[in-house]
Image 1 (cartoon, rainbow, N blue to C red):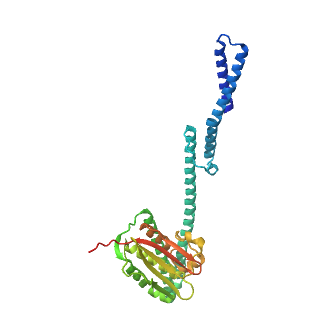
Image 2: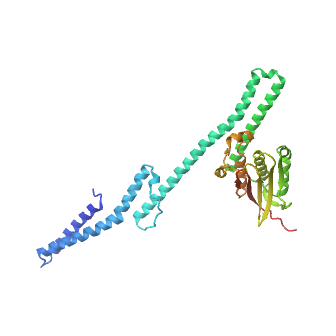
Amino acid sequence: MISSSKNLALLLAVSISIITTAFLSLVDGVTYYGLIVCLLIAFSSTYILTFIVFDFFIFSEINKIESKLEKLKEENFKTLDTQEPDGKSNIFSRVNEEIFTYARLKQQEIENLKKAEAFRREFIADISHELKTPIFAAQGFVHTLLDGAVKDKNVRNRFLKKAARSLDGLDRLVQDLLTISKMETGAISMEFEDFNLYKIVEEVYDQFEGKAEKRELQLKIGENCPKNVMVNADKHKIYQVLLNLVSNALKYKKEGLGKVEIDLKENNGSVGVFVSDNGVGIPQNDLRRIFERFYRVDKSRSKDKGGSGLGLSIVKHIVEAHNSQIKVKSTLGEGSTFWFTLKKSVIPEE
């Protein structure tokens, strides 16, 4: 079996030179010396020409294809050539390009699967940890009561209240998980309507008035914020977004007097919503991950703050459902600012 351009070129050169010499021998007047010269010229020229053609235009491409097929067989995608196809028109180059494209897609699929698997493992570990805390707490209180503490009325009421708080936290966690799951699958649709965003800000601040006073936190609205800011959005979902952002600011305020400020800025066709605080801030390395499920910047401190760890993830999903993006900038020890945009209402002129 012919497996190289050299062997193939040699075979063709011998065949063509013999046939050429045989035909030439039939011509009258051709000497024996002339036939030898013709044989050598035909052999050498045919060999050189066919060797170049087969080696550079056929076998080199076949070797590349064979090499890539071997790497595909070994699932060794990373060692494949990373250069883009050059768009050559011969069939071997096109086959080579097809293999390159297929290999690149397979490598991308494998990398995506590895990321998904890593995310799945991390998610299972996080959800197990989050569920374990309220379950173990409630379980401990109930078992203490069953072991005899139920006879003491004061102890019984105190432990039942603690068990109820743990179960309430568990319920909030499950509800938040269901909310995110429904948003991702499209089961929850946004109910868009026109409303005054300024009033929603006031309602959110009313909700936190008592807690803010206890925690020495000032709730402010931007000085130049217009009081009639009409937007087209899901009123209840945007209320939830602002509620979660202010709640985070409340949880992570610094010692002493804190401040949260919501500002609304009207642009052409949109309204920018800015939520700023002067709290502990977020490290730069954590900024890109704070919207992930259960991600906590400081796990040891976050546990004491309560919450399901899903608040910012829910915020991200709601904002993206409004064709916008939630963004953040933060300086450690100085505070953070979250912002996004909403579509401005188009109110017909009377």
